[in-house]
Image (tube, rainbow, N blue to C red; front, side, top):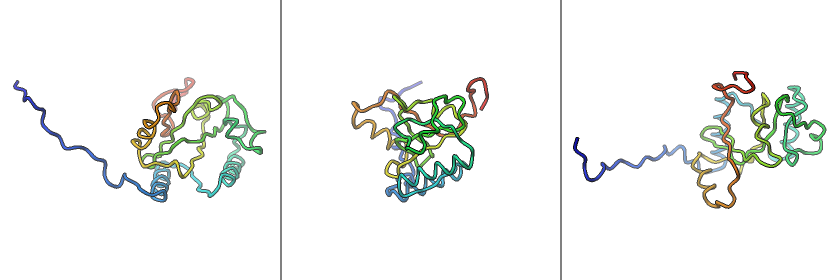
Length: 173
């Protein structure tokens, strides 16, 4: 075989233009559409207090109590329902650092009071997503993480949905 001294030039790959979602409205709309396709229930609210009420309504309607949630994420009316036995709780509540509009992926930084098991073990998990933290795609998150290496968490977890190919506690999901 003969090798050229220079590798052939390949065109630079660029994602389709529709993945460059510029405005917050556009990113939120794409995320809600992705959630709809995935069968994820989402409720858009204007303020954090409305999010609290929405979570409480959902918990009451579904019978999800007690629940797992970081203590600093809980609000006063939620505190009586907190438990830390994630493996036996019906619901976990987590705040996403970012959410990818392209895939519906939630990005979380477990550590300290924010246990990884809160989003891993309960059969149902809710994510509080700040509109300002919805990004278009994965590279937006990676670029932001690259800006300040001293701020990097011990781990970054990308949650795209329930596991269907592995077992947790010997139960195939």
